[in-house]
Length: 290
Image (cartoon, rainbow, N blue to C red; front, side, top):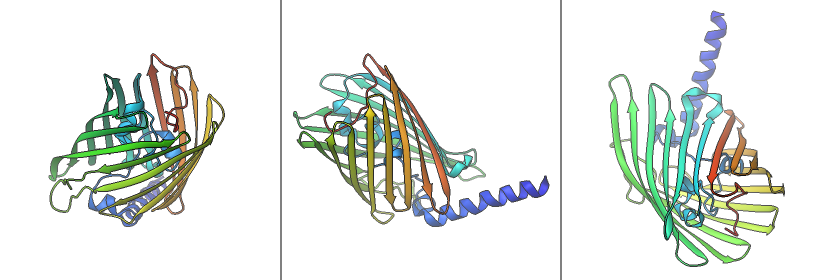
């Protein structure tokens, strides 16, 4: 039993060391790369051109397309390690002429944690263009005398639909280069993505991201919906290289999404999200026609 526990602890320590080496943003900024929502996870987090309720976190311009009250919860357990758990809660509040979003996230465990609370707003500028902005308060806490710190960031984006089957999204995060202090930088990130829907049942996503802490990242995703209530997904991320797959199921006002991603060194990460739409059916949201 003692040897088993030692082996288990050794395995966890090895994974944590590998993560620090392979993910510079963990050691430099303590800010986990994230796109809340298991639908996003299933398509490689290529979400900038999507206009679904999870746009609260991924591109606030998508809020302009949401006209129902909505609430969703999300959880991921990176590489099956409790120390790298990440959870979020979001809600949409429609007003005239746009929609407000509230988003809360939490990453970490008892010894180290980072949380974020954000308020965002998106609206339609014209029939084909939506835009949105968000303000976030970040807090980080480290025990054993290290204390805590906080800072404020801004973000915003735009989604443009030049033709019926294509949407183009752009998003910028932390343009003011806010940070927690020395050696605790948060990245400034810019992303550009395209969503193409050749048929009613197929959605193709392509996205590129660049930030001030790591190398540029390429993402692509595919969603196939053979029937309205069911979707299958697959995705690819280039930096770090990982594959993802997932599925979504909806009944009336409820959406359930599941996904897994695979890193060739660190292993699998499971994702799950549940969402409820008030006053409207929980259809397969976020395709270019919205």
